[in-house]
Image (cartoon, rainbow, N blue to C red; front, side, top):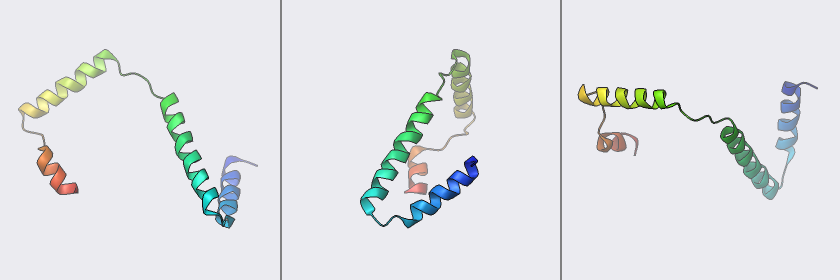
Length: 77
């Protein structure tokens, strides 16, 4: 059984679950697993990249390509 078939089978089985506790446990497990995968794939930013990002931010600020936090907050809250 390939990955796609396994996912379909899992979803079908998941949809048959009637116990909310089991659903909650699966949600917690999925969240933890995704977090662990993400953490294991993180790589530190190089010092050169870090400086490039700072330079770009300063350039954006100097050229008025920024959004005030108050404006951003009011847009999404």
